[in-house]
Picture 1 (tube, helix red, strand yellow):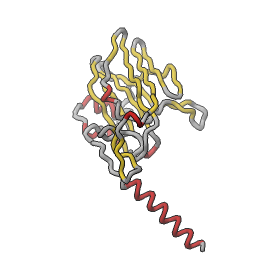
Picture 2 (cartoon, helix red, strand yellow):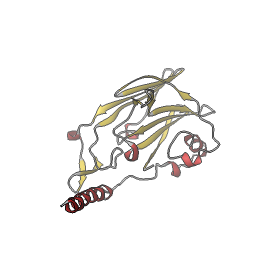
Picture 3 (cartoon, helix red, strand yellow):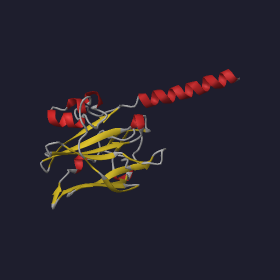
Picture 4 (tube, helix red, strand yellow):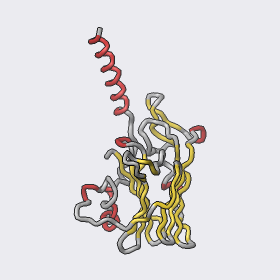
Length: 210
């Protein structure tokens, strides 16, 4: 009897694991750290990203902006006249076209790959990504964050210290600013870095499967 229950449980778990691993992943690697051709920016990202960890040896940390305010669904980082605000929104599946695998696993949203938990419906969005430098507002195109879901902000760690998954870093020559987020949970998480150069949005770098 016990042997039969064990075999049944193992079969169910193995089937579930197979189903998760078998979900199609349409994410492109062209925005990964390893695909970066910008040498200076790549060297900078190696100092704080998981995707660039193998190239971090010998590199000094970049100057960073402190977190000045945060909540369950927002965060503000500010250094001098530079301010970054990120806010989450609620994902409403009725306003999107959802593509499924096996009728239950989400594979695409609005006909595009998405970043969140593979196979699962997102709960939240990045609703606001606002960057101001003095009186200038840096325009970040919505396409740079529209496919990024389940943003993580700050949490209280086991040692009672607050740990934030968001950072703003500055290149040593002050020409580039990097806005970093580590979203999702553990193995199912992803990281994104938006690069701003000379007050212009340049590109983003996205990695997952650490």
